[in-house]
Length: 107
Image (cartoon, rainbow, N blue to C red):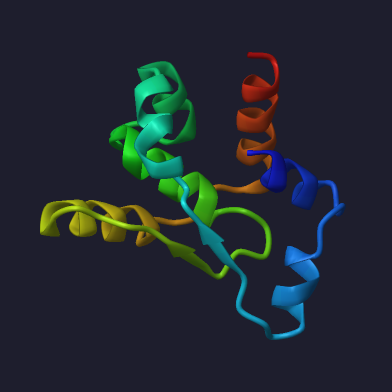
């Protein structure tokens, strides 16, 4: 979430790159699955109730300021469908992203 927090504060160039017409790709939103072992349902519900932990992290990543694409790896067709469903949802707004990064910064 650090890059998202930095982008919200205007400290990284992803926003500018997207504004210039460049594609900004975020990679490995689940950090090889490691984040899934640490996620609690409370955080998933803060991101967006009703999502799986994987979908919540993918949506949060896709909602980062300036991000135009999220690169994910999936081990099955159902995982691909789950990821696609996450990015098909409306992005999180800046206020929600700030709330999420604040919660994670306090952990």
